Length: 207
Image 1 (cartoon, rainbow, N blue to C red):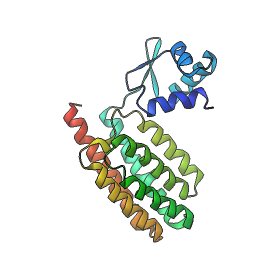
Image 2: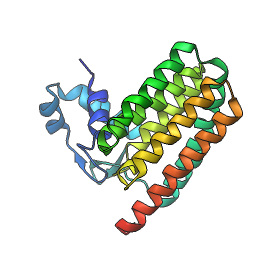
Image 3: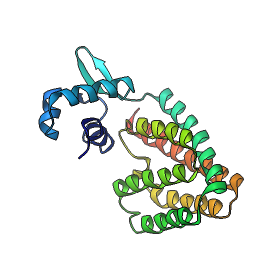
């Protein structure tokens, strides 16, 4: 059984609660079948992590402006590239095979952006773990948690799912070859393309 914090965070990540939505303690307690005390503690924790912000006396799901998104992608590119370099050095053969299997499985789901978005998170998480650096994993967890505040997945853009999978394939090839520089380049290119795609989506949406 997940705790209240995990339940609320998962609901935000899954889009049940979107940026600007108001979170009410009593409603959350009823929805998740838990008492109000752990919900209150979870909301305080999420506010501390800047996932929620105050609107008067209420708490709402935070949103990211353009500058925050740019800063987030800048940090993400650096950390993901470092994870790729370390994974190329430290990943076990089993971890490499799991990464390759993930890419193969995702090719069968390339027409479903929401499925791809979930599997994309798992893929990147697997690279983080393959870096075998707990401090880097912690920082990337924070980055990916903040990314849950984006209202849309960049994988929803036409053709992005297919190109992202091709990029994933190149990342795995570099890690499997133990080529840290190639893994670094492949991940930087992957994050750059994701950011460019998101910029196009935001421009079409008018902000």
